[in-house]
Image (cartoon, rainbow, N blue to C red):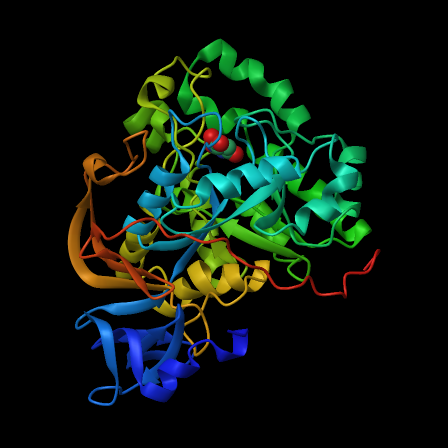
Length: 462
Ligand code: DOR
């Protein structure tokens, strides 16, 4: 069947694989009370389909809002090598239970994802085990810089990710010459963890001496983040490369990035929008330790302002599980990172309920935004011919986030005991109901995400 023929038979017979009725559907037109028919994994009809369409399966969406499937473009699922923390099955299970339908996974596994064989091993490991759709980042480093143009175009590759400051794992590219080599060898938008390694090294003694996790955001301070962000944006401008700044945390970076939006896209995490320092570390200790750190209120306010002003393009969870035993090591030996893929949507729905953003903006940040900036094929909106990835939520549901709901092998969330308003109820991926009423259905059927061709207009020195 050719791409153009997909769904044609279903349309001719007005018979769908899945018919979803009674919900308020977030389409590019806004919120509409319409039905959605899905066949061959795609959306094949939208509108009042009552009485005119039949289906193998129906899903009653009365009282629910139907969002385009949530895309989490930053997770660490730890396979291969660190599967005592997480693996592709547990990580993607948490994703779909939390309403996430697609993920991009990060390269700081063991071994690192640096070569075609590493990528292929992840794609093979995901087959038949991933509950949602997936793509994997390739790590950019001194050893593979000249190969990145070929690597980034392999099927299943989400692009290149660079760590400018060491965080968890051995992936690091902190030298300007190496960074320039990486930037010059590729054309896709490059994802960056921007903390300045030299400054982090200089300041490490601060926390070695105190052993106090409340110092984490003083060690990895505003200047560490701002300096790296300025450096990489300067080099990207010089080399004509587009960038994606991961987990931006400071007011100062947001002010700087607002002036570079033509080239640079921006991610924030629900952690940085929800918690603030030092309160989070006083309450949670090293469970709240992550890189870049959760910072003081003024930064959190600036992140929300950047969401309102359109500086932020996507919400990514930076799901980075470690076991409770590992987290209990004395700081700074305790590893940085928290779970987040499963709580991304509940937290953002709670923020929506509190009036911090609109539903339309949320959809832009969690679906349309990632699809647009990474050039994902056929995802990110509810429209004819697009993948039938749907996240059905109850905006009024009052729930409490609990550790025993978390599918991650690490088994914890920093939000244990937190009441929220708004909850994912059903998750549909390519027309398959993967989660119904909060329960997993069937077997894992995740597929590799496809990307559009890179647009050709990136010119050196542009
Ligand atoms: O806190 C973090 N943990 N930040 C990162 O950049 C890496 C992550 C991890 O992999 O644990």
